[in-house]
Figure (cartoon, rainbow, N blue to C red):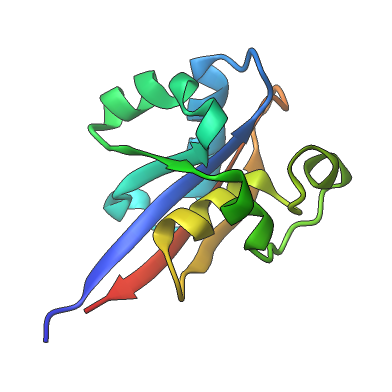
Length: 128
């Protein structure tokens, strides 16, 4: 039986975050793991549009994660701001884990862009 890895970079970001902020957060998260296999990007459903340029650069699809899916995910990082805004400890970690699917695990916990406008985490699920 052949096994496939689903590796998702999840994002959380402030309204008005520039594409450079998203790229920076992605690069920081990728430094923690082998990002060569990233298969998709993910963000809360109401905030996927800003990921379009990064997704095009990387030739990757964007997965829109429903608010209730974010809330159901237990995250390593606990941010009071994320809890207040999205009812999850880390939007980036929750988006990555929810989009990767059941049984996913974090490869890289939330990393924050230099300008503090975006976060990125990377999750993986092995499927058969």
